[in-house]
Amino acid sequence: MIQIHNLYKSYHHSDILKKINLSIEKGEIYGLIGQSGAGKSTLLRCVNGLEKFDTGDLIVEGVNLASITEKELRNFRKKIGMIFQDFALLHRRNVVENVSLPMECWKYDKKEIETRSEALLDLVGLLDKKNSMPSELSGGQKQRVAIARALSLNPSVLLCDEATSALDPNTTDSILKLLADINKELGITIMVVTHEMSVVKSICDKVAIIARGSIVAEDTVENIFLKESLALKDLVGQELISVPENQTVIKLAVRSTDIDKNFLWKLASENQIKFSIVSANIEQSKNSRFGHLYISVHNHEVDATQAYCEANGIQYTLVNTCGKGAEIDVS
Image (cartoon, rainbow, N blue to C red; front, top):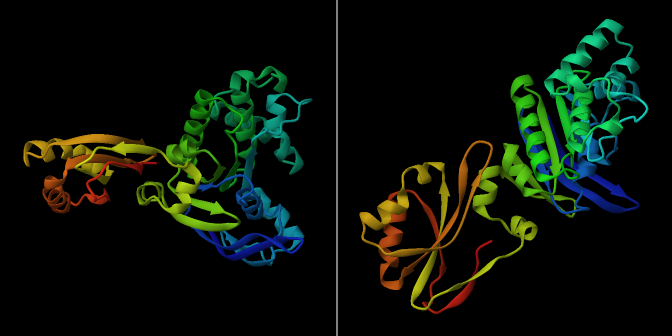
């Protein structure tokens, strides 16, 4: 669907994007996450041709933007919808007129414009607001109008540039649910640029972490968080806890299958191992539950705990092995 090979972009001899390689499948919700200035929004604008890049290939549905003409680019952009943090609505046009604007620019039939605009407003739950002005809407409602407008030309890709950053948590959840529903109903591919971990966990299938213009990690959402790369730690920071003396802390990487098997109960009941949970971070993503558990066991029970984990296919790491009290990172 979207293939990016060795893409580079610079401003005034300073590299903004370096050796970008990504592959996004049709129908995926793909997250791009990173700190401000990392280059994620620039990469998103390269995908719809708003930004030129220096070298490399960027192929969307068989069209290589590296060699496209201006006329071809104009037609290509019909395939790409985009929503922004600030909604970008025209305040002198009402809701339905904002949604219909792209179709008017492409000189669609008036009846088709009316029918499709109302159908899209119904899809985003705002048909009853079709004659309202943007100033009469909440932030979440404005973003719903922007989503309807972005879908008006029936694109195959929807780009979301920090689309929930200006919204409160409850409204953010409703917009993310709407995007997930649209993805499922229309089969549209969605690229999400965000600095919010909760957004990635909520709706994305895969995620890439961008730092200083480069892709520093890429995988499924579950694997990104379970592997705990240095790139992820740079984003989320550190959380330290104290460990009692004469005990060892073991970090367990757990997935939905492990949680469903009540593996902790079996560790205690079937193996007679006494342990304490010193920290836990279990997340719910779009497709699964996953996370890390930190348990402390007495030093003489470490071998038995390791054997249990290995027998049950549970990934583990010995965090402190000296048996002395210490502070450890559980972020």
